Image (cartoon, rainbow, N blue to C red; front, side, top):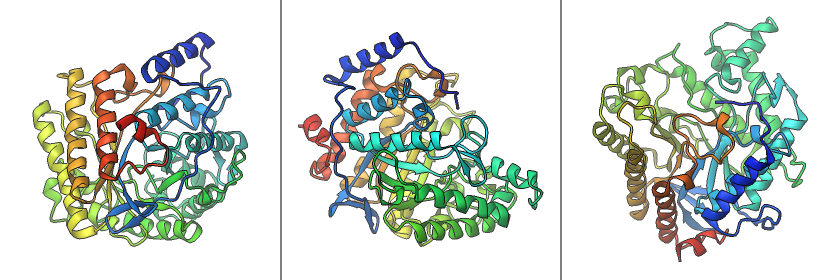
Length: 427
């Protein structure tokens, strides 16, 4: 992951736009639709509610939106991605609202921000609103990419106030907790320089994600992470009562969970997280789960992975139907093209397995409310790609499946989307 916002030739960008024009029809970047009026998404039990009606989500990840909005010559691709998502009937995009330390950081040092990068995030939110796309904004990374908890620990250590050099001190060091709270406060109360709306008051933001894939392996009991989540979710809700909030969990069960056998291996119960225990915290509005069988299993064939994925997805929907009584979103799912037995057709099968279960849950008014594929891109941004990424219109079967899922969910909710894209797409 990552990239330095490299500029690309005008010809390359023109080719990108032309390709999407041929795929989606009348796409005019110079004449974007007027700002769309959005309402806040709410929760009622195990359902998302929009304007009094249930909402189901088909969406995607493009973590790179802020990074690629830094330069006016490259940010057009962000608009292309958002409009293309809307044209496929997608309604939510998950992306990073962090870049801590390092090159073109949003937070240069604790409490010090680069206004130019903040204005790039302003642009992402404003553009999403123009296209009727809501954003799930993640606030920090457990991984080292884009700084993450490692950077916070470095800052405390460099200032001579850190209790430990362990990355997990992010969760228990009072000084680091203070750093993070200050960051959260700054982001949530940020006034968008384009729209004039504070982030906490902007319904374009679907929800906040506390941290991407939290793990605290130094305390496998889970107590340290549980306490941190309780404190930070309470802090966020004290600032912003408008938006939904999720943790960003991978979905692993803890060592004391009766469902630990569902984990992909014993290692998964030693990471300091527990899907049910963590998600049961009062201020957590909906649960999150990731699906990466390629990372979890190295000795299983594709069909065996498919069977496991089906079991994994159904298990978490069951948790939320019967115990948590909260919505569950599968906020990352992907199939690597680096597998030894990889065939392009497997991605469609893998995606369909997940999307079919979501659809069946939604149809019977269950807690499985949506999924976000990892990850979609546009042409010309190869530096942000990985072995899971794809340009959807370059793979007709994926493009068709994505639209099909958008329409299936829209029909369940009565085509009541505000953008009008679904009404046209699915009629």
